[in-house]
Amino acid sequence: MKFKEVKEKKQEELREMLKNLRIKLGKLLFDLNSNSLKDFSQVQKTKKDIARILTALKLTVSN
Image (tube, rainbow, N blue to C red; front, side, top):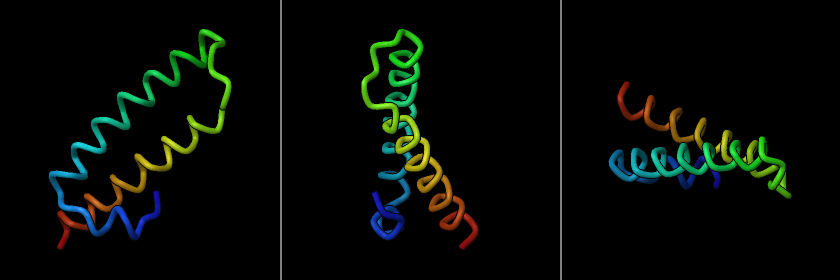
């Protein structure tokens, strides 16, 4: 997901996406620790998506 896409979304949508991504990250980390995760890059991609959403939320709050 690109930052441009995230920036265009409404604050409620961003909060919902953030909630879902945090749940997804928890599942990925659980799978990583139980050695059942095949694609390790998914963890980093999810973390970056969370950071993009948090950045967009901070920008909307400050404006």
